[in-house]
Each structure stands twice: as structure tokens, then as C-alpha cells.
Length: 110
Image (cartoon, rainbow, N blue to C red; front, side, top):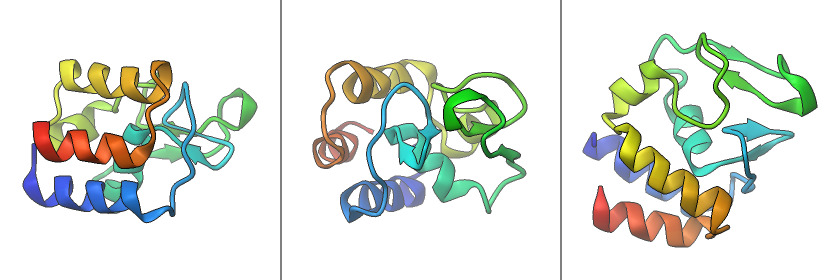
């Protein structure tokens, strides 16, 4: 994973600026841990953001209908593969682990 983005991501997760949400990268002003990284890089790459394009206030990042995984352009930019994304989604959505603990995991494992 890109070290500079990793450090910014960890800091953002611990900052309290991003309310934690579940089942979507961003919905109704709340973020999955992967949604936080999308927010961090959206001004650095050509990433289309469609606010409230989908039902229930879900924000769509990128050009495809996928609300849980990183869009391809973000995945490539931050260098975070599908297996690691799935681990993070499980921690965030299934286990409901808080952002501080997810940040600790990212720090140790990515």
C-alpha cells in the first residue's frame, strides 16, 4: 500500500471527523473505513463522485455500481487489493469494529 496514503488514512480514521457507517462506502454522511480513503484521494485522482445518486443517501464513487468495494481507480492509486479490502469490509460491516481499532490493524498489516 502507498505509505503516504496509509499514514493519512490512519490519521483520518482516528480524527473523529468521519462518522462510521456500514454497508456502503458513504451513506447519509457516514463512512465505511474504505469510504474514508475515497474521501482522502478524491481530489488527487480522476474520481467521479455521485452524491445521492443511489437510494437512501448512498454516495457512489467511480463509474460502476458498487457501494462496498473501492472503485478501480482508487484501488490502483492506493495499491490495496481485493483480499485486504474484504478483510476491512468484514471488520467494519460484520464485526462492527471501530475506526480506532481498524486504524491499528492497518498500521500493523498494510
